[in-house]
Image (tube, rainbow, N blue to C red):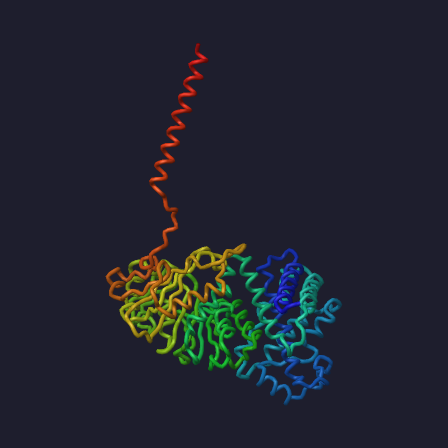
Length: 513
């Protein structure tokens, strides 16, 4: 069986477990139990592997908790960021889950102990609250303790039955892929709520490549609306680890999604000292100001959300928004995220941001912000994508690429609306589609019906309209009509009609005799 077949089989098993054990509970509501259990197994096996240290004679799961000395504990926390006692390991808890009448309370105690182990250590903020959404007392699990324990045991047993192979060999990759598979499936089946925190992998690949194009190294990569961390992780997957020197940074406003992102980092073998995901409102309480500038920024911020905007008069003096001289509209915060990203961008880097198309042609404050971006030569490329690429929306969104190191006064427009493969629920970008977009992006060459580079003066003369359709001529897909041939066909049809009419008249005359 090939690795692809193994992965497909594993994913099918995972999704079956996720559906089977939830019973009547809505899949979206139940997702945390499956995702957190998968994470619990991962960190348990990761920790046991660390303690083992390559010594085959060591089996951490069979050791007594009393074996652990304060020195072992402290050293482990400093290295891994957390500590798990042998009795707290996933495999030991899962082994007795079906007969454990205190399973729900013991799990809560274990999760609390893992989180508390990081207190007063550098990893505290990365570990704190990771299991907050795994509520072992929730009525979603059942109305009685027995019902709750039964469902929890089913989840533990289901995840325990998944064959990830030897941890040291490939388990990290498989765990991470399995986790993203679950997130993507939950997102695909949850409509808008899922799409808000997950950018499809195929789109994430394109965005990561745009942001890091031709950069041999970047100091760090940042996502101001991190969601589940999928955009940051694509950068890790696509590029060698050493290219991203100082790690991965992001901010997320939703607490549950913030937890997903942190788990996702761990599951892809990014240690606590190489990532920093913050919880909070990026526009009103921005973090990482002391970490900027960033050489690579990737983002899929929420489309057209409300924000306080001009109702807070101090915001116009904010260093992120002040240079544009105007704030994004209160009902459409899109450009607030764009200006935030621009402010955090280094002089050598790029930002690749998914944007709602309307911001590129509407008037008012949005037009003034576009003027600021164009006049200062920050817009490198605007890419129009195919519709229905994202979960929860069929909109044909755009990607805005910002740069502070352009060598000409032109803006590139790419119409990639025809580059997609249709699948059951959503369209996707294939590797060939991504390669084609990147080829055109790199060359900046004009390609009929696909790409055009336009002088910024022409954009200014066009009221700073940045809509791709204003500059890239759409291919005429209408059928070419041969007028001569059409006229001959019409003549033939008219003759036939005349003959038919004469025949009908003759029949009527015969009847009337």
